[in-house]
Length: 357
Image 1 (cartoon, rainbow, N blue to C red):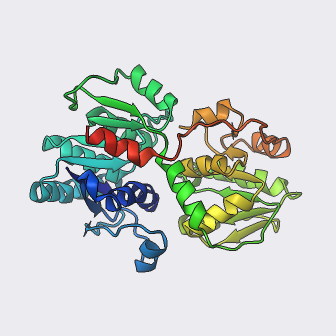
Image 2 (image 1 turned 180 degrees about the vertical axis):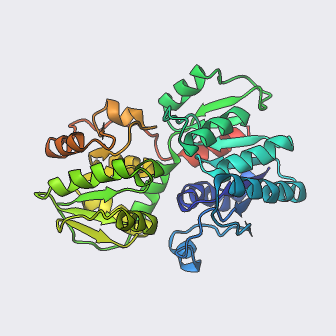
């Protein structure tokens, strides 16, 4: 079986590495993988050292497309991926998550009648204005295999008429499977090999990068106002260059209790998540990683794909409401029960087993 895997953002490399390592280390499963990087996110940190330290297979093909408008990026990706599919003739194309690379890969394969496997299928924010929501919904509907991280994801698909069927599977007759969360697998692996040292303690980890917050000055101002009001707490904020630029242009600044640092690598971020007392974020991935480290999370969005974290008290949704943010931080509690929500760390094994069946 030949799998063509399409990824484009740095977090997708970390997810894909779990499956790629599983394939690489098991010659007996008779699976070949070709890894394609669209270049959607240009990241100077993704050097040879990045791939070596993270134990991530380097891409076989890099389209080097870079960033741009949604239409420009997706169109160029479609063209490039289509040519690769026609040349490599894979048995299936596999994508992760909800980026433009995800949608472009799925569309290119679907139009060439190559079946699509979607890892992290069924996630929903129920906010169609978000590009990620559009990407994940469209990808799910043209995929053959939908690998869901949670029961919630399966229920979301059922409500849209996407249900598990018996073989033979195709885009109209789908395989919907509960596999667990591949990010949990990644977290377990990288936590075990993380050598980063950081003695920071008793701080709140802050991340802000989503366009719904950074591109709406009213929301960003409300968040900054709330953080500045919480000067009894220490914050550490790894600031994305784009966010830093927008803050400066808007004349928004944090008080001294907020320590602004440069963007950090994955290992450094894991250590910050491990050492903090609370996470305040608008990132989907960081919400989950907070839970993996048994840290409560406050989410600076109006909804979340990870509703089970809210239901079990590990995540509080506050949007960009100043008073809600202040109240949530001051009244946060760590739940006494730590439920098993995201599988047993064998997601890659389950995915390959299903694809090979």
